[in-house]
Image 1: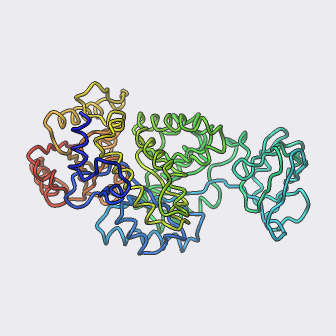
Image 2: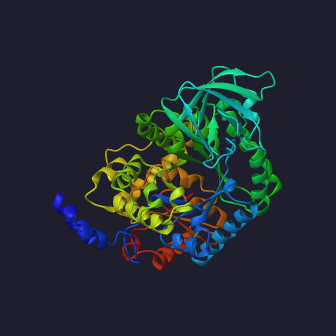
Image 3: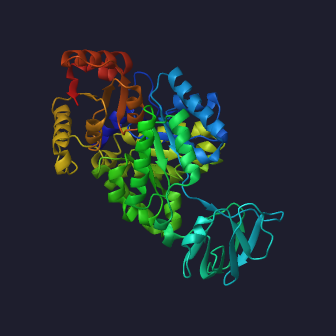
Length: 517
């Protein structure tokens, strides 16, 4: 069995002996005519390091499936420019590239300090004054100014205020009657330096703070009027009531602006969000696991198991799930990822995630294009290496082995039955791909949550539908005309496979099976 796997590895262009020089030369990225294809998707965050047409075009060429625009990081004019650039580059390469608008949510920050280092040093046990002052720089000893007043309306004696993602924690000892001045005692051990611009939060009051600020409402109207993106990712969603409020407001804008019908994604950033995830996930279409923020809120040792649980909840619910933060963080400075990062990506794929979000690696890193290229190479290697049986046995479902399909519920019993039957038929008939015809993508989502072994081609008549579906694990999207009957659909599918895909699929087109949805 092992020797057969080695031969298959060699036949697919991957070397059998793991020698460094051979691995460097190994063609890990699929080329025209290559039978391998990539299932997991790659989302690149845009920023100063990759805000030109050339860099965006190169990232698409090397495998980026979507781009994330962090609305709060740039001006409205710059965000519109980036949106138009992505649409142009995607059209030039005839790709259905998704655009995700990421909204900041309630974010409280310390204002600048009036000194050369823009920082103060605090000791364990020292008293700290926290005051609301949006405009001024702070020059008082052991005092910080905060840019928003809302946090002072919910703060109480005994609350812990967490600064700078965890390194500094202060416990509130008193609150002034007008709720503009708070005294706290630093509980972090040793000496800690706090910089102006650092974030702060009160973990015990997350559910008391509204999920949308005036900035988010402004950005939502900008998106509806001038940037009809495919996805919107919301931050600081901790309860079902948070996401219901956002869902209702998005629906309101969609009625006012017919072209604005984004899919909804939520970041999972806090233990409270994890606790309420099964309720939250019923109102969204995708989940982004913000591992950096989660790691600040809980013990690091629990993070891997929490990540696995979140991915499983998303798959059980038929929702997409993407891993963000520290995917290839070292490539912000270095030209190759670390071995630990490669192993981390491999383990995430084995957990069943839909893909990855590159954050600082592409937005502010020095090697944006190379990061996309390397991540794609890692994914292709893991998904297609015959020697790696763990990925196939843990994630892929053929319908003909002892592995059971994901459980269904009364609401989805019919589409799930069709999905499992289609996967089983493809395996029994030795079909080389499944072709599904979809208008809105509902049936496709139920199919892909099972993680079919064979490639899936989806045909749709709407470009907007094709763009959001492009983020689905394992899906290749094609826009075509509306079909009149099943014969017309079969003809279009056969022509598409012959013209656009690899020689392996073309040789076996007689095994192609069409599944309408």
